[in-house]
Amino acid sequence: MGGVIGKAESPRNGWIPETKLEAKMVEAMQRRALEGTSMRSFNSVILKFPKIDESLRNCKAIFEQFDEDANGAIDPGELKHCFEKLEITFTEEEISDLFEGCDINENMGMKFNEFIVLLCLVYLLKEDPAALHAKSRMGLPNLEATFETLVDAFVFLDKNKDGCVSKSEMVHAINETTSGERSSGRIAMKRFEEMDWDKNGMVTFKEFLFAFTRWVGIDDIEEEEDAEEKV
Ligand SMILES: [Ca+2]
Ligand SMILES: [Ca+2]
Ligand SMILES: [Ca+2]
Image (cartoon, rainbow, N blue to C red; front, side, top):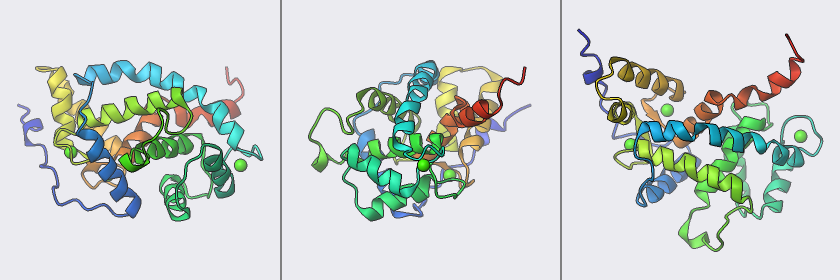
């Protein structure tokens, strides 16, 4: 009889961020976590998926606007222009850290899903109270509302508010909703493993975002377009 779920690995409290960007991200998330979350259950997170999906897809036009040479990827130069237009005043180092951190297949170009993740990280990082001036941080109010929902969902999962989601937190969040359902723990594990790319037992906000773009299928958009009606 089962029993596996109860023996979930304990979270690694000594986890140390590998890059400066990761450290900043975790700090920003910890600050944000202090404000709490509007999510009440894992289901309330799931219920937001369709709206988030729609909003992110609509963002394709923004992506195309900044992909100046229309080659399907935003290169470092194009990203610089993008930040200038959105009045995102990050240092050169921060921009290149972000670029490298989101350039998952390391081809020096942001594909659509990578670009979305990058913008969402910018949104989180801009939360620095010192830089807080306007209602909108990036002049993209609709998209920012969606990013806020994603941050909110992450804060919900991050029970101990340390800026990362551990396996036991994931199990906890899912069990809160579907108490008594045997499969829920296994689903939680599967979801967690999908998210934890570097298999270090912790899911960062960036990992969460990339997993999200996969779940809602945003990472397939290019392929869908290339696959010209394979009916
Ligand atoms: Ca380009
Ligand atoms: Ca945590
Ligand atoms: Ca990880």
